[in-house]
Amino acid sequence: MGLGVILYVLASIGVGLWAARRVKNSQDFLVAGRRLPLLWSLSLLFSTWFGSETILGASETMAREGLLAVIEDPFGSALCLFLVGVWLAKPFYRLPVRTFGDFYAMCFGKWTERIATPLMIISYFGWIAAQLVALGQVIAHFSGWALPISTAIATLLILSYTIWGGMWSVAAVDLAQNVVIIAGMFLLVLFLPNGWWHSVNKLPEGFLSFFPKAEGYDWLEYLGAWMIIGLGSLPQQDMYQRVVSARSEGVAVRAGIGSALLYLSVGLLPLIAGIFVRLYHPEWIEGVSDVSPILRLVEGYLPGWVQLFFWGALVSAIMSSASGGILAPAALFSENVLARWPRFSELWKARVCVMIVALVCYFMTLYEQNIYDLVAESSIFSLVTLFWPMVVGLHAPRWRSSLGAILSMVGGLIAYYLAKYATTAILPLWYGFGVSAIGYVLGTVVERSFIHYRHAA
Image 1 (cartoon, rainbow, N blue to C red):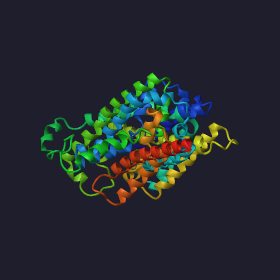
Image 2 (image 1 turned 30 degrees about the vertical axis):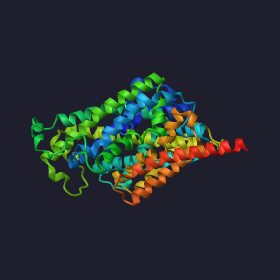
Image 3 (image 1 turned 120 degrees about the vertical axis):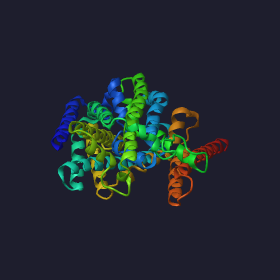
Image 4 (image 1 turned 90 degrees about the vertical axis):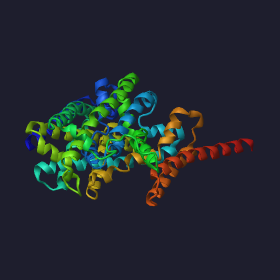
């Protein structure tokens, strides 16, 4: 089994290095030269978040708490991809910018970009580190090596093709690996004992409820779960890069909608496995365990060759999320932070930034190895800072305001963390989201009043 997984990982790296031959300049490296056909583009968008959290985290959360606890992923993730297809793909594709940091500079000025870019870069570190830890755990499982060593190997494996091929390598590896992900998830459910679903009536009341009870703050928490990834991941560099890598805006639109449907379909399969665990092995979810219930399920119920497919699917999902995740902040760092360093070519600057991001995220894993703690803030961070300026910048150009955007980002961030540490009854993201909107309006009014006063004087 271990040898099969190793050979699979090496084959994936080989695909990435093969695709790296297409990289001739920084545009090839960062957005695949804007030449990806529909199937490649759809696969690239599907791989945005389909990682360890979807396969391991969502299944365990489903087994413990039921359907309402997994609204954020896969449902919120599918919503995000759908909104990209029907709402943002065309305006994203038409932007005359190289990074999403450039978008904030174009719409609101350089000071706004200097605040937005670090916020976007920082928001990726926890997510990437979580993928490195997850792949490190797989390596440690088969090798018996210590987790820090296994995580270092995981970092080097992902870096080996991402640093040379950029988005071309990420897209090629994603396309090859998504076949294994989809097959592995379907085989996981297919090989569960026949007729087990007849026992679903034994689940606790409300376990499969898709809507909350109409009382207290349940609806705010429910909507918040949809928003965390559904809206929070829209104003991000990785989403922008994946959209504009398509060869046309029509391809980008179809890829967004198609990837949403695919994500929802495949993302439901780990939830089905979680239901099975809850019905037949509730002891697996009692207390705290180092072994995920779904891994116990795989080892206890699936034949060897199906286990190999599952491990391949898990490794594929982790590598896809990690490589694309590393490329996004590296692009921002290269294009928006180091842009004034002319000594290096743009392509080599981007490659150096990929290495820097990977190393920073690896060192994060030495201090925090809980996957869920690492990813908790990623999408919320951008939701409470970057969402409202993005909406205005794209769809209401008459109301663009540099001061409004800055107050929106800073105010939303401060309000969110104040509410979080005050342990408010309402989800902290609502305070951040609301104050971000108010900050934009207030900043716009003040800026326009000042301009009017100066003209009058």
